[in-house]
Amino acid sequence: MRVVIQSNSSTVGTWAARHIAGAIQEAASRNSRFVLGLATGSTPLTTYAELIRMHREEGLSFAHVITFNMDEYVGLPKEHPESYHSFMWNNFFSHIDILPENTNILNGNAADLLQECADYERRITDVGGIDLFLAGIGVDGHLAFNEPFSSLTSRTRVMDLTIDTRIVNSRFFDGDVNAVPKQALTVGVGTVCDARQVILLATGYVKANALKHTIEGDVSHVWTASALQMHPDPIIVCDEQACMDLKVSTYRYFKEEEAGSNQ
Ligand code: PGA
Picture 1 (cartoon, rainbow, N blue to C red):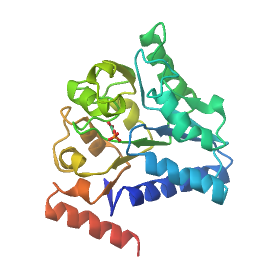
Picture 2 (cartoon, rainbow, N blue to C red; picture 1 turned 90 degrees about the vertical axis):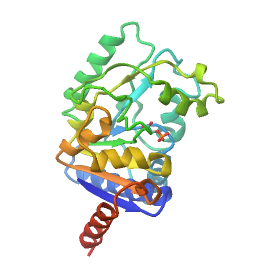
Picture 3 (cartoon, rainbow, N blue to C red; picture 1 turned 30 degrees about the horizontal axis):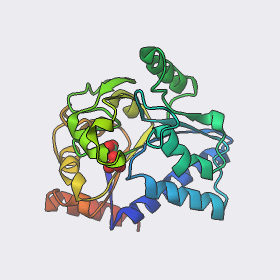
């Protein structure tokens, strides 16, 4: 596991955006399309802002990028301002040159949700799998909406959201937990871990406990992000505050590793 410790959420976004841009450009230099898994939430906003800046000022193109989002609420209209469709278009897709037909977001209003999930997995397989999955982490350690006790081999499916997650997300619904949908469609832990590379972002002290379990704890369905310990190429990009619960020796190890890799 690689852990990149940055000073704050802004530099976390800059690091992640530059890494993603480099991977997209490397694929483009081979005339290859790039399949990018994406997350919603507060944490990736700085990454999206930097990618948008690179598109505007440095010519970074998304014309050959195919995206798959992690999750979507069940039953929330696509046009609702807090749907993940709205989030992605408002915060990222509308500002870059991605082709709308190359964006994939689960349909939480599909007549047959199980079929929607099965089709999503097939669509990922049909494009040759995901090259890089950008992820966040919940305060309960969830990876996508894979709540505690999700199977670490799970695939895209319907998930009941925990009350913890609904309380945390109620900040987007005027603080009204009852307005937060009770279910979501989410890629599984197995779906994320099938990506060739996973970048997990964690910022703020609120994520410190989850990050400790993810990096230092056992691989466990209690903290589903800990499944990344079994991934061949995971990168955690976090800020100083999110490291507050790590052992000093763990923190120093990763700081020294990165200092060495930059020389
Ligand atoms: P956040 O959400 O970025 O809004 O903290 C992350 C998550 O719940 O996975």
